[in-house]
Image 1 (cartoon, rainbow, N blue to C red):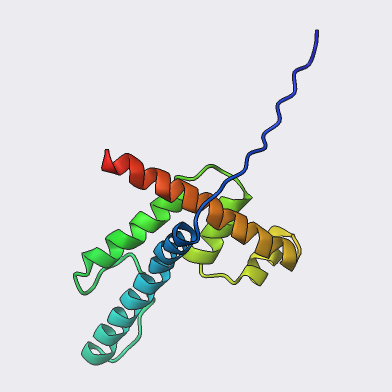
Image 2 (cartoon, helix red, strand yellow):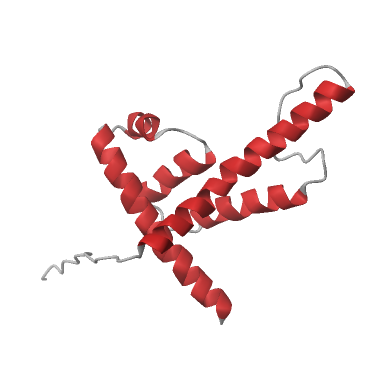
Length: 137
């Protein structure tokens, strides 16, 4: 019986615009998370005078757009194939960790973590542009 080997090597090419677009798209999660925390803080501070435990999925102000956008970004990341790149994107953009902290959590060097982040954004850009093309049809 002979063994077959499978090699997976492919080159992914994305434009700088696609790369920047997906990075900005992923950053919207942290923007809306901060917005919801701020609105929750303002509501509690001015109405009751105490600070509760903040849960960003609760929507005290009726800001369903922010919650929907956060869900969309999280769903986009989770729809990618399981790999270290997906884990890196999740930790950076959803959890809000720095690249250095991700390196520590993943047990890799800082330089490897920065290379992994770049590779993750390239994969995300490819996934994002493919998704956009599919939605246009």
